[in-house]
Length: 137
Image 1 (tube, rainbow, N blue to C red):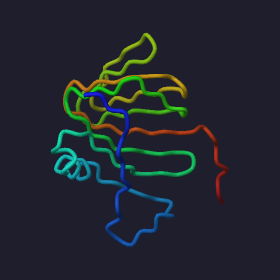
Image 2 (image 1 turned 90 degrees about the vertical axis):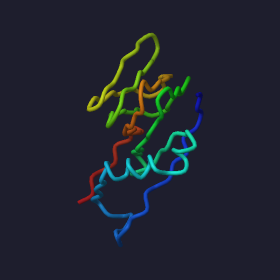
Image 3 (image 1 turned 45 degrees about the horizontal axis):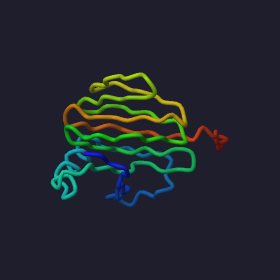
């Protein structure tokens, strides 16, 4: 299965928290369980949810089925993959690495990569544009 785009949607706060809040917490096991019971997942498609989107950073919780392949993708920003469940084979340039639950991979900007899931896999994808924002007092 070749996938070119990720359909993402931000989580809807269940309480009255402002989206401008400085602290957010997420119950990843519950979010993952909900993702795996969604119509999108049952149709055999990947499921992705934006947890945080700001000018300098985006964090996306992504669930992929076993045997999913994403070929020739490139981010203009630096990225990290943190494996929550499963196993992911990652290829960049002439290097390959297999990532398992609990492992983290970082990749500099403008590097083409591809990935394949060896089993049902869930990971956090963090995209950072490298622009440092001044700290607010």
